[in-house]
Amino acid sequence: MIFEKLTDMAPLLPEFGAVAGLDLGTKTIGLAISDLRRSVATPTKVIRREKFTLDVAQLLELVSAREVKAMVLGLPLNMDGSEGPRAQSTRAFARNLEKLTPLPITFWDERLSTVAAERALLEADASRKRRKEVIDAVAAGYILQGALDRLAQLSR
Image (tube, rainbow, N blue to C red; front, top):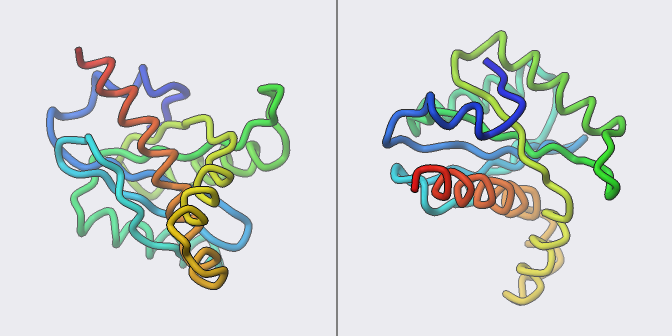
């Protein structure tokens, strides 16, 4: 089931259980998964995109192994808050994913998440090659951490 807002999905989540964050790119899908208490997002993997069915098979295998309870997709809004072609592509991905999993799916504004991830990797003195390998997973971590922080606020 797709929820437009995290606040709509939050009441349906069990008290404990991991949540996955996804940064959807044209060539890769960055994946981050939280701890069971949903306090820390950990960049986990970068899936090289080939074909939707193959990509989702890999994704669902990973989230099943970690017993993920929900997915948060980064929604690439324009800087003025409007939706462009990339946001529409993300929504289409969510609609297709919804047909293959019972997990709740929601969106999180991902503006500047890749910039923040790049900055963090530069500060960590990661090589250019290493940054290229992990940037999407780190961006997924930023997306998921924002959503986790909001979930924590809602539970107070």
